[in-house]
Length: 335
Image (tube, rainbow, N blue to C red; front, side):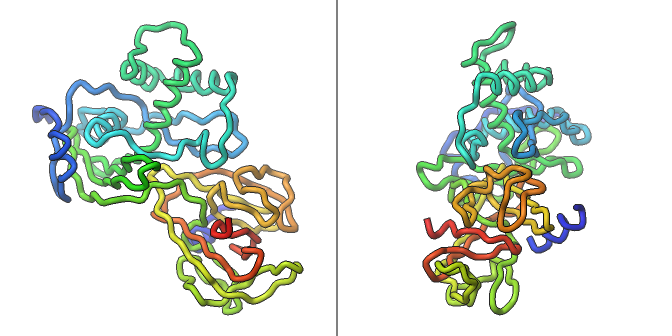
């Protein structure tokens, strides 16, 4: 399995703190700008989830180790980033890729998973004015759970004596926002290294380096251009030559999850969960044992996507079907 995964991936101190600058100053900060951070911000343990598709609860991972000589926990840094830049944009896992209602039982399970991590739970409670409570209503449990999902959307990684961060701000309804990257040192000082306009969406596409079947051989999806030949399945069920009529690349948010799907015959792919299969289902609804493309699902797991974009193409013809890593899928551009 490790060899298969590798193959697919390849084909695929103490300075005083001051107040935040006003909104106009923050909005016009350029690369390399050092921004002071706010004081009295609560913190929590970070959440990074890599859970199988059929796992009923979203796991709470152990606390990330602080960087050397850091005055702040990793999630205190996350709260400071939110205070500095605003609410992060993310694709809510309960609405995307496949929207479904969270039952009271499921909410109870997720709330208790958070509650078992005292640092995380108490920090969220302080932040949401729920400190000191012993019992919680379902509405209050939902508030705690929603906050954990928000924290999970900010990527934060230790790098020597600082953290590297990445987040997106804005709302999908407006269509665009900001993608911000930078570093935070042990004193909590934020340095912006990249700030640019970002197209905000929850993509429905293929991972980078997915191999597409064509009469010229297998070609990486990001290398296909309009007019290039590609294999499709025509309306009679026959494999036939076509040409690429559309291509698209979609930038992804920092917390974007993608499905690692493996079939019993060894075929495997990394693809967004809402991507349609040839028979009209979506990848995110597939479970182990389900029949697919002349085989069956042996493994299906959501993982954090490390690429910057996802991709898709549309072949000519009536069906919009093509083979990706040998698996017949339907183009999202034919919807």
